[in-house]
Length: 161
Image (cartoon, rainbow, N blue to C red; front, side):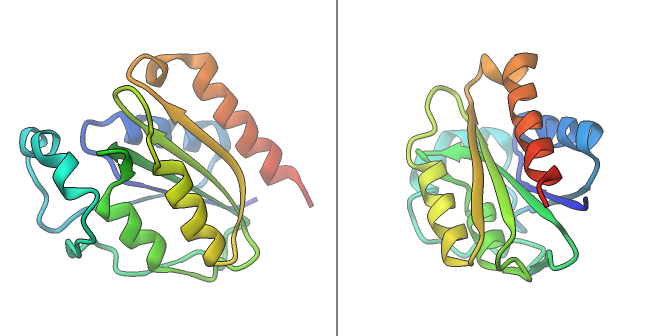
């Protein structure tokens, strides 16, 4: 099973979970970043204003071809109850994803808001099947059992014919 793990991370929480997935399940890590990368302080201070706006922040890579993958995993921090602009643009730039299963996760301070629903809808429009949705608040992000449930879902989804 070949897995593509696409993520964006500002504080390192989303990156940490993506790396745990790769360690447990294998796969390729694909980090998406904004080219006008904000400092962590500025990102957290104004995130509630940036996330709801449809903003083209010049995210790279511009397109991601997952045609060679059997499973896609996408992780995002939550900004103002929504996925980061970098992840939204990465999802819009996915190619070769029709008919593939995807597992999504979000890291947040308290609650994920609309993040998972927004991602699930955008991925369904791309022809993908959302096989699992997970959110991790500031306490759960370090909880092995919570992260292990995500890893188990990825392993289960990847083992299906």
